[in-house]
Amino acid sequence: MSVFLDSTTGVGLAGATGVRPYLPPLLAGALARGDTGIDFDGTDWRFLESTWFLLAVLGIGVIAYLAERSEANRRSVEVFSGVVGVVLGALLFAGALADGGSESWPGLIGGAVCAALGWRAVGGLVERARARLEGGAAALLTAYADGVALLLAAIAIFVPPASILAIAAFLVLLLAGRRREGEKYAGLRVLR
Image 1: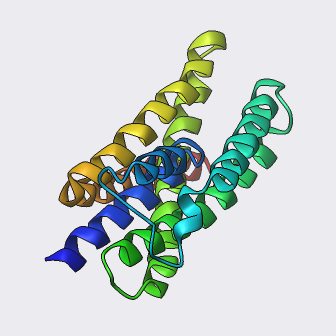
Image 2 (image 1 turned 180 degrees about the horizontal axis):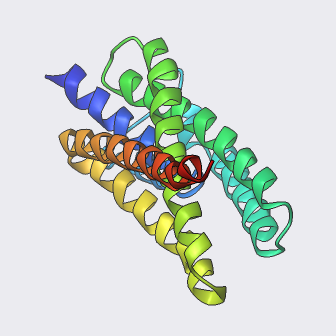
């Protein structure tokens, strides 16, 4: 049972990190420092709760936030955040497995996959929504994504099996987005 709970914690943390890469590692690290729900001490992944690591994640997060607000090349910022999310998701999944005493290397692979899934699914949804919204409403999407990522990370730590629902939701969002793209271009084929 412990392997299942550790795996679902890792799945949820990695998926949340894929949604927005900076807040879930900070939450997991802060809770791990207090040994609340998760603890990386005594593992090779103890750096995930170290001060230097948390400050580095916070610093990178602030830089990415400022880049998003400056209307820099939005696609470059999104790709950068996606790559950071995949790396952090892999680390958190491996750390969650190690916390339970399991072999941690499968978490590196599973975490990267779950984070990439979260990034593609929610990133696609945010882009579709941003295209329909204007000004301040579009800017709020980032705040909503941050809130969702924090909520998913907290659920992953305190109610690990519920993380399976988050991954299922990511799959539904991804498939719905692809279906909508197919419908968008279906009308153009008729015009030929």
